[in-house]
Image (cartoon, rainbow, N blue to C red):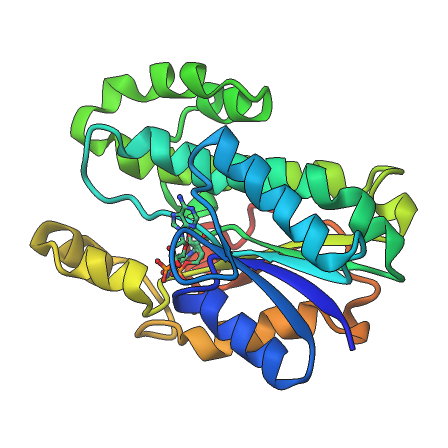
Length: 261
Ligand code: NAI
């Protein structure tokens, strides 16, 4: 049986993944800001350090895999763009940097990062914001997004998900990751009915936008089904998957950019 770290394990898709792994007999080290074995606020560097260290201690320095599901959606609020950047980008990169040696200890470790189809379907996301994320400079990210005013959280969210997808693809193929036998991939869901989406649907203006958004297959994704995809991406059947961003989004990404890939 294997040992997995799962962030964002107290709600939504992270919770569904953690439950499936545990019921299959694996050891799950769950990380979240509330109700978790490792309780830590991933929006601060100190919280990330604490989470990284606690998981390394609980795992004995060997991890068969990790699922990075902690994330914040594009809700309104002045401080929201910063929180989105801290959790959605640095909450993945800082933890995985710290866990890489433990993942390399395992045989064919697998990591799944939650990206989003916002990475390809939100228009006009400034490239300079994405580059600033990849340079590790959140102040610069926020500076580039100020022009969007109240819409800044939407662009912070999309930029964080583009940046984390690029980080996954760049990092996955390096000697330190692929060369150490670690399979690093991302899943890019469309709108999935979880507490994150429910909060957005509770705001009439956002609900209108979400319902108008083109989803060729119709409806919303199901958290249990998305969790099944993640469990598959952690399995031996996914040994040849490396640096991929797997879109599971009812067809929205294909609708927007069928030929653009
Ligand atoms: P959710 O809101 O149900 O779960 C997210 C979890 O992250 C929660 O347990 C929350 O406590 C945790 N979290 C948030 N801030 C944190 C912090 N500062 N420190 C530690 N933990 C924190 O959300 P859901 O929908 O399950 O989302 C999972 C991932 O999937 C997120 O990265 C999200 O951006 C992504 N996603 C979600 C979509 C959706 O429609 N639900 C669509 C595309 C991507």
